[in-house]
Structures are given as C-alpha cells and as structure tokens.
Length: 89
Length: 402
Image (tube, rainbow over all chains, first blue to last red; front, side, top):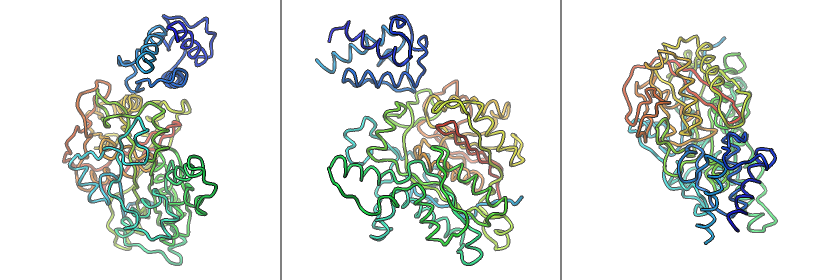
C-alpha cells in the first residue's frame, strides 16, 4: 500500500466518522475541526486498526502524547503510514 | 421519616477476604493491582487488574452451590455472611417479611456467560449446563441472599454501571425510611475479570497498562477490580431496641442524571448529586470532613470530579480530605461504591482517612487534598461517597458518625 493510498483511506475513515464529505477533510484540519470528539477519535482509531491490520498505541487519557500524533489529518496519516511500515515490513 | 443506620458490613476484594483485612490494607495504602491470572491473558492488551487472588471456591461452597453461584454471586454470599454475622440478625415470621435485599451489579454472571459462549462458539459444543441462565442472571446474587437469610420483603437488583452499588444502597435506605422494611441487605458484587470482560473494556482505550493513579498528573487510566461489599441497613429505632452496634448512619442520598453523554461525565450532574445528598442529610458543606471520590484515574472523571467538588464546596473544598481508594482495590464497577463505603465507615468510626495510593505528581486541575499515598488520622463526623457512572447516572451517599 502506497503512502497516497494510506492517506486516502485515512481521510475516508475520518470523513465517515465525522459524517462529512471526504473533500472537506484537509491535511491541516484537526479532528476537532471535523467535529470528531474524543470518543469519535477512539472509534476512528479502531477503524484504522481494522483497515490496516495494525495496533495503534493510543490512550484516551493522554491523547496528546507523541506515540500517535493526532493533531491534524496530515499527522494522523503519517502516523498510520509509520505504523503500517513498522508492523508490516 | 425513619432514620437508617448500618449495623453490619462484609466484603471480599483484592485487598482482603473480609472487612478487617481490607481496612488494614487501606490504612497501609497497599495497592492490590497486579498481573491478571485469567485464561487467554496473553491475548489481552491490558493485562493488569485488582484480582481476588488465591481464591478457592471449593473452600467456601459445595458442588451444588458452585453449579448455581457465578463468581459474583459467591463474592456476594461471602460478604453477606460477614455482614449478617456482625449484625447478629436472623429473620423469621414477621421480621422476615419486613426484610429484603437490593444489590448493585453491572455484569452479573459475566464469567458464566464468557465460559459458556466460549464452549458453544470456540469449542463448538452444542450443549451447556442446565443452570447457565439462573447462574448468569443479574438478580442471582440478590436471590441467593434472600434464600440464604429468609428475606421475604422487597428484593431486586440495580444496574447503573459504576454507580450500581450507590443506587442500590440509596434505594435500600429509601425502603426503610418509607417504612416498607425494617432491615435491608444491600451493596454490590462484581466479577468482570474474564477474557471477554477485560477485552470489552480494552476497546474503550481508557484502561491503564501500569497502575491506577487517580488525581495524579501522570495518570494513565483506570484499572478494573472485582469483589463485593454488603451492608445491613436497619431502621434506627429497630437497631436501638435490640442494642445493636451502630457503625454509622446513612443520612442522605441523591441521584441525578447528566442527560448529556453516554460516557463523558458532566460537572453539573455531579454537583447536583453532591448538593442533593447534603440537602437530603440536612448537612452543611462545612460538616463534611471526607469525600470518597469516584476517582477512576481517567482524565475525564478526575478533572470533572475535582471541578465539581471545588464548585459545590467553595472555600470549604480546601479544608476537606478526598481520596480515591480505587488506587488500591481497582474499579470494582457495580460493587465499587459498596467497597468504597468501607473507607467511609473507617473515617467515621476509626478516624482514619484512606489514602489515594500510587500518587506521584500534582495535577493543577486536581488541586484538592487528595491524601496522597499515606493514610491520615482525622476526626470526621460526616462524609460523602461519590459514584458517577457511564450513562451519566450519578448517586451520592451522605453518612454521619453514629
């Protein structure tokens, strides 16, 4: 899976979670900008794990830790791509 | 309206197999969280819990009982034996008709469900034991207590997730207050530490992988526990007449609903519950010397609860002690309020405030006196016990020294 395919899939998942058009999911938007709250984020992370067959290190009590950067859509895409590379070399 | 007192207490939990050993552990600030010893633990991401270790069901129950008693029912029966023995009550004729049992549980016979789903789905069996239904049902523990002690009045089970015990105790208190019963057995029991039970919690991403550190800047989430806490609630005049040893008075209760979110707590709901319990008990905020916090060790709970306490108590918030004993016995879900009530009784009766164990570093959003790591002696005449459940269902109890 190429980086671009991963990015597209991440955007699809976030768009579905936020119930908005995928065209409105830009790299610079934060989950909050898209209307995704903390539990919505937990659900989206579950969807990443299922879609890419990866384990995402994420604890809702400390969402801002550097294990998995959720500050923006772009950061999430990069973090997912890194996990896919690490866990499916 | 009748006054309601506690004349018996019993428990089994990870800290100890009875009330004295539990209170000793709380005084020492001992944390019972450790590696989970359950089937398929290697397939779990969360492998810690406050488990009742070294437990042998055959030491307490015979073959017929074990066929009918899920682990949560066993815990309830063991805790009830201790509580009833302390109260020194037995029930016959009219006294039986005037006594009942209201328990809290969230998962009920979850181990029984887990084992039998495994049998039919994973092992491909097409037959299960004939008593699976009466063993797993959420009212099984209450039913067995009614049978064991001949309680023939109002009996049922309350399920409000993490507030189940407090709702149950509040409801039992209401029965006696209203004159519908003279004695009520109440509290809660929970045994969710099985593969399916932990796996479900794992999904929520709020569980800690190391330990439970409520109100601490470095907290990493909640840790599940298990066990039971059972109490004998009695009409004050009834207890006085028979010369019973009164442990404390259940002076007030309030139940509120956030009506906002299925998992995120709302400050206003917690505030209304604490204010309501004070009002119901005719206590002033300045009367409260200790709060047993809900204190789950999640960011969502701890920040909201501290803000709510600060708002309700104002300047008084700096003069009261508040601790989360979940740091020691874990979050016992539907039994947790009952087990935590033991810390309230210890504060009122023995003048010892149980600590918040595992605490490391101040969180500015939880800047109350949370009694870090070491128990403290204090003269306390009234306390609150908080429970704020998923579903936004809150129940706060107010207790007063006897």
